[in-house]
Image 1: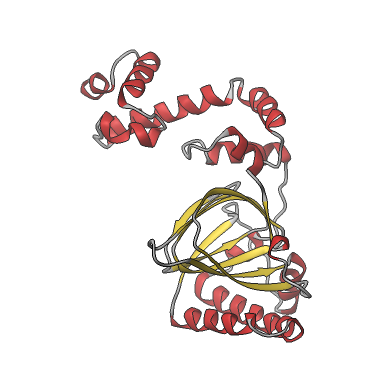
Image 2: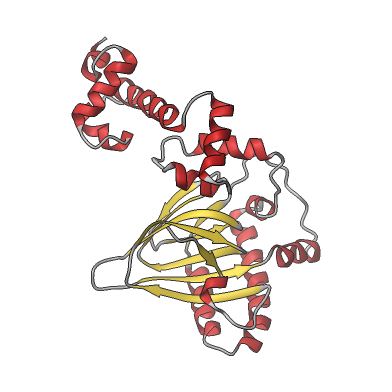
Length: 279
């Protein structure tokens, strides 16, 4: 699958620190590999959006919008129905512009271990009006756009900090302390998300062969066997603690049919799912 580089592949001319793009499409995409070269607000207007990143996976409808950190992600975009287009206003901004904002407003760093690479926020009346303003700005020439987007960025950041808190600000510019730690976080975060090895290696910014080699080194198992074990362990939890039936969960766990799931479960636990529940 081809990697989409944003905002470069949108061919937006003449802008550097800030870019805005009124994105519309009549085609759905599923787990498209996307390289975000700048931090990005995705103001969803029509459709549904799902994003997998290194530490976070999130799904929204058009009552919400996303803030995504610069880096690799997998993006799914679904049409609202067969008649309407998917639409999202994309607002890109650089790390330098964010650092300038932090310095200008003397924002103190909030130390937190709960740093994410994607944040979801609900719209309110102010934010709907703000997005309509971005749409109007996107129609102007590039010279005036950059000046106005700088002002709009400050307006948006001040409002979000006041209404949503400050945690998201420093998550966007945090560096990965350890490449190994980052790799392990990606694997652990996505152990139930049914991503392919190719998709996981993309999120890890590795080739498939490097990813497999590093995986076996760190987890002492192949990716396919390790992920299968984790999903079967999760299925056991669902059976015992949430009273789910095997027929309810086999697809969620990643099996195409019930009989293969039952056989894999029995191989791992020595009993069928039903026997496990009754034990």
